[in-house]
Amino acid sequence: MSNMAVTRHPPIRDQIAGILRSAIVSLEFAPGQLLVERNLCELTQASRPSVREALRQLEAEGLVESQNGRGTIVRVISAEEAAQVYEVRAELEGLAARLFTERATAEQSDALRSALRELATAIRGEKSSKQILDAQADFYRVLFEGSGNPFLERTVQGMQVRIAQLRATTLAVPGRAAASLDEFEQIFERISTADAEGARQAAVEHVRRAGEAMARSRPAI
Image (cartoon, rainbow, N blue to C red):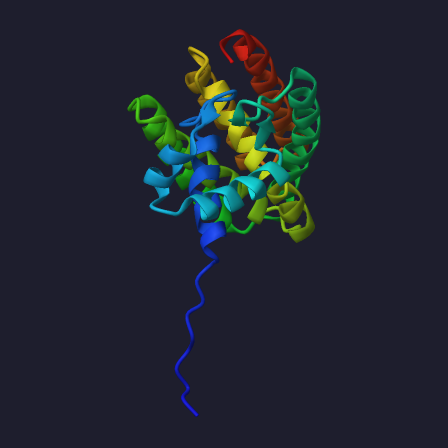
């Protein structure tokens, strides 16, 4: 019997859904935008049946919705739903910041410092929205890993697509990127001085301000 490992690739539907999900999260496909199957086939190099299967998957995730007579559109997050996400996100990120301060190793603290440095470079260098969002995601990845609570990590991962979509929306608000960098630096400063409660409060305040930016963006979407 051969000992060669068998490489298993995700189903075509999942691969297509991943491409479309990324486009929605980054706002390449804007809220309310009609998704034309022909264009999606060209983008993903997939057949219409495969694209339709992927769209059904994204609809189950709440990212798109079918409208009779119109087709499939990118779902618009209501103000009420956004507020609910921010409420939960504030508590989870606040907890992560507190636990990181209490539990993170020296290596994880160094990784967080490095992630913050990369985020600062992306924002101050006026990099693309995707590069900034990727840098933010890396900061949070290190933060949650360093919290030492795998269940907390998994809980956040379940909300990750919706959170990322909201982050991309708030990032488009003029001045928000620079303001958010100040807030990230405050979180790190509290962590670096072993102020666990201060870190929690700084993380909660960051999410509160992001929610305010989201509210300001509503006329634009």
